[in-house]
Length: 185
Image (tube, rainbow, N blue to C red; front, side, top):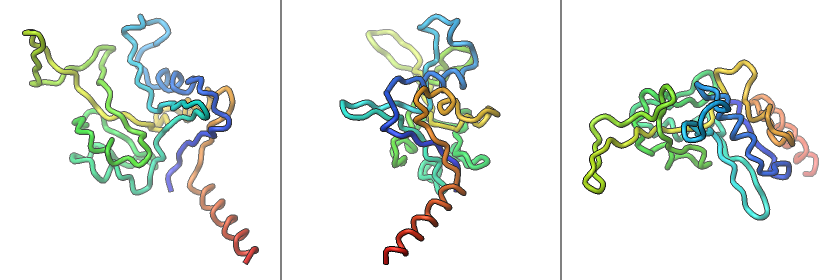
């Protein structure tokens, strides 16, 4: 079973510090020294807030990932227990967005070197002006796979709302619950 991160909605205050930490962890450039219009602000999780509750929505790193199963060109793979999106081969078809049972994938504009990448050969005309449409790619939590410190959201959360769940921990929890249930029978 793959490792994933969950958040306790009772502890989440909706501050969105996790989103900022995610953007910082995945940015090629220092976002604190850039002009606000130049920042690629595409966190790999999103905080949902209502009047009663707030909590981040993020990938559960499904073992038999529906998003990977439907990807038409194999851009979503299991890489060392992390369901990973290869941005270079993603075609932005939205199939993974539809397949995700948690709503943890979204399409975002692709950036390289701090600039938006335009989709080759996709011209649009608006008000008699021709322009190229932005290249869109799938975006979701990758557990900060390239960081030796682990997920940035977990470390940055001021209320310790996040918890890393490992497959072995989950197996142990299931065994304990089954033992408790058997004791009541």
